Image: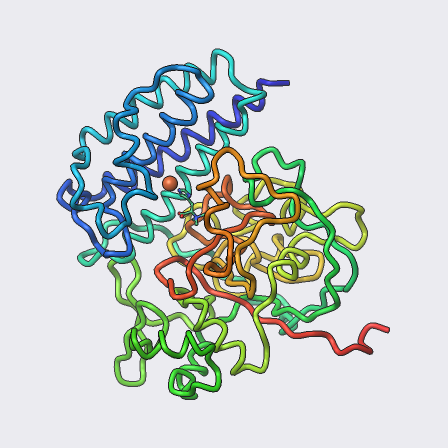
Length: 433
Ligand code: AVJ
Ligand code: FE
């Protein structure tokens, strides 16, 4: 009984470590210690922070051991030092950070093999997810970095050209829905507990908003018209001089984008990427639509009218595979909109998991009955109206940190994350009668 839990944790930890090292080993030490953007840590901070969290939660908490470097806790406490200040700290050098990672991992695997789960199984899953989350952050740092490409991956497969065209939107039927989970063993505190919400009928975009559609908003003067913008968004769009999604460059009548060191034409069929919440909100208003709430998004992704309980993934309970979704940094870009028929939700929406994180209309708050676990700083300190929720994961998100209940959050001005969106509208009141 306990063996599969242990084995699953061991596999997840090893997969995370392979990715962490791949993201670091492709750069010379000087590029690990330099700061590529004030929004991000030097990559060497992420390395030692990953090790330090594992030291805290697996060696000390789960293992009951003294820990390898408790003296480093303050240096790698994300709350003590904002990202912009991290390059000035006396950080471990790259070889020391790699050593710390390896030494902590040796002890963590001993502890895992010797005793901990079931009771501490969650902590091992949490630490594997934590490392994968930082791997996504490290990939965002790679995207901000200047210089020749050091990462490469095959493009996602093109959708079947013979497939019938998809409807622009799908109806999500109204009625009660069970949001969140009380039983998923790897769910983080903010996904808990399960609770019932009433979600009326609404129409949701079948696929995320594409570059081609977003370009129409840009070329229609969307960035010059305050009518479409939230007042704070309009101020930010002026202060930051936003005119198009992040990493887009106009070359005459052609739009190019920078992507991991390559400059290439913006692919019209891909979901738009690197837009902030204000841009997503403005586009939706321009289109006569709105962003879905978090409850609407989750219902579209999990609700099966034919089943008593919601699904873990849009396609069902099966673990995410390459036919379901573009996850796990297999590809370093979103797949064209309309890909992954095998990953469709019961309502018919596609690509809810993977490709791009999707901004929702909702602020990040605790569900009724929320209890912080294992520490308040994972989620609770972010609750309130400052952060907006993103759902679904991106091409950069590992399957271990992606399920239909998973909640991500960021400030509405941020666009270095791998975020896009889809829109929706209320169903007219007489619809479906
Ligand atoms: C859930 C992605 C918002 O990166 O701030 C990493 C994840 N928490 N270390 C973040 C996280 C602690 C978190 N996000
Ligand atoms: Fe962290």
